[in-house]
Amino acid sequence: MPRGLKSKLRAREKRRQAQEESTDPVGAQEEEESPSSPSSGFRDVPQDSSAKVTPRNPRVPGGVCSTTTTDAAVSNARFNKDASNQEEERENSSQAQDNTEQWYRGAIDEKVVMLVHYLLYKYQMKEPITKADMMRNVIQVYRSHFHEILRKASDHLELIFGLDVKEMDPNRNTYVLINKLELNCDERDNRGMPMTGLLMTILGVIFTKGNCATEEEVWEVLNMMELFAGKKSLIYGDPKKLITEDFVQQQYLEYRQVPGSDPPCFEFLWGPRAHVETSKMRVLEFLAKIYNTVPSAFPSWYKEALQDQEESAWARAAAKSCTIAMARARSKALASRFSHTK
Image 1 (cartoon, helix red, strand yellow):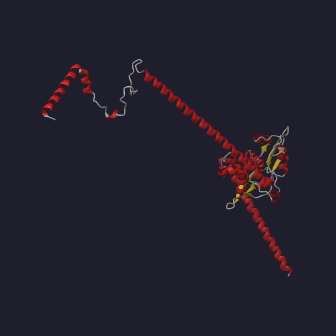
Image 2 (cartoon, one colour; image 1 turned 90 degrees about the vertical axis):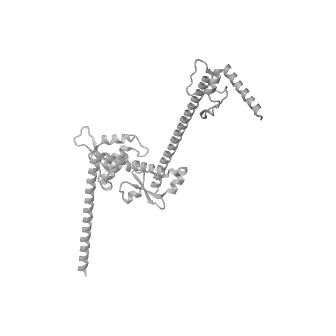
Image 3 (cartoon, rainbow, N blue to C red; image 1 turned 135 degrees about the vertical axis):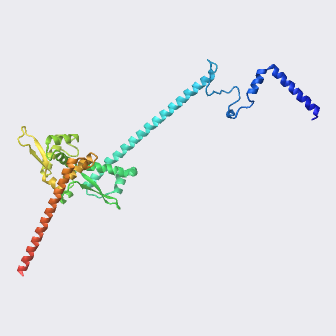
């Protein structure tokens, strides 16, 4: 471009700027104060005048920004509604989860009851008990809960019927039910509905009442078990007959009138057979199981049970020594008689 023309254009541009400054000095001052392009912090803000941009700390004089305020209120209401709906959905989901869990727990408990009946049937029929049979006939789709169901069923069998569930062969997964009383062979073979759980409970009442319990004290505990005199039980039949006649005839209990009582009162003691087939420690262990604790949690009874255990051990050792001595004396007598015949 020729030098003269370039000078003319530069002079014309200076005159135009001078005219704009003379007609609008405020605009020129604002233009100097505000950069023509947005700063780096606002590059993403829409530059269109129609765009609704709410400042961080807006100053809205009465009614000027009513549209923006209304939109914000609608948005806020919509947000609150969405939050409320989400909270309601979470509550419904939690309630549904609780209902599902309750239903699932109910199904597990039902399996526990079924397994108790199944094991009692196997016990009475003297049939072997295997894990495979329990899984196939009772547990079925709840295989992952087998150990939980078996544990709960075992607790019921122990506390109600006095039967312990023992695993005989871990390799073959075979189980057996063992009566808490040391029954003789004939009684082990004659398996009716086991009453040992009730008997152990009564023996426990007698033990904790100073080895002698009144009939009233025994019935107070039995009433808590929903057993009442004169009212038949589905499991135990006539409970009064069972404890005042059957258990007495079997020599598990002694039932006698309190001396000098008028009107007559009766009391229970351990029978001779109870002393032979069980012990205070076993009865205390049974009671501790009911209270979900250990025998040592009852210090005075535990001390008495230990003492009884020691005395029983000495008595057994003495009886064994006596038996051995009698056997040796008899063998010597036989040997002497045989030598004389020669």
